[in-house]
Length: 334
Image (cartoon, rainbow, N blue to C red):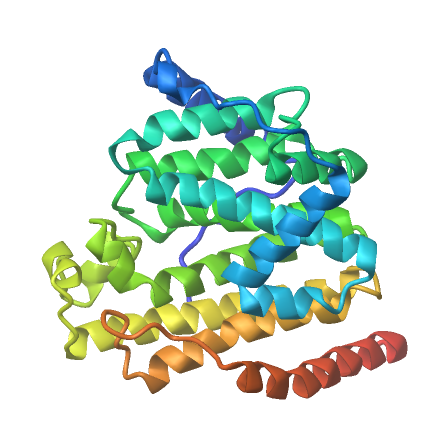
């Protein structure tokens, strides 16, 4: 099928203009937020030990994403700790936008200021652990700016005209996470384009699962060009209309996501050997949500697609076998 995204969408080394746009977007956010209200000053709390900060990130991961917590269990201890700090940072950043209500722009502006500070607040466990992880693994600040710019897009944009427009959003909020993950787990040259595609696949899966929740917030991430292709309008999504045309739209988007997952899979072999199974498991477990959406007859308005722990565990042998098959093909040059 035709994916409908341009080849020039961002990969490291050719994204200078995009990074500039992210910086400009964050600068505009900080400017629009203006002076912070007096109650925005956080009361001083006792400084935390770094080990305690990492433990809290571990708990955040366990509480909010059982799938990611499970897959990250297969990483070596140091990499696992860093990956969960990354997850906690992303989760906390995302929650600021979703849960701050009418003052979301000010809340995000305060968060951006704290993230960009030379040193993290000594009493903020997530930023303390994240700063240590970013420093140890030399995460470029430009990548972090891209991630934060993606969150700012949620405050500014509630519709995406084309899949190309959506691709930029997915890149910022998900592909960038993959590019940072590469730095944590280790990788060979050439892995970045695969990480970009995997990020878009994961975020598209997230979008398809959460159509109903996003509609309740007035957001529609499905490209408007695709709605029009299947004879749908904004109101159909906002009102939870689940008819033949909506099912056709969902089948199209699910096929698109599966194609991206397949395009991204060869990149797993370019990661460090001790991390391939964890990243492969994370990708395939999340990909299986697509099958759940189909099994639920595309009801993403009243039912949240998810896998039970037993279903996740049953996937692991097949994932391991697929990785081993890929390794054998590499060894034989097939």
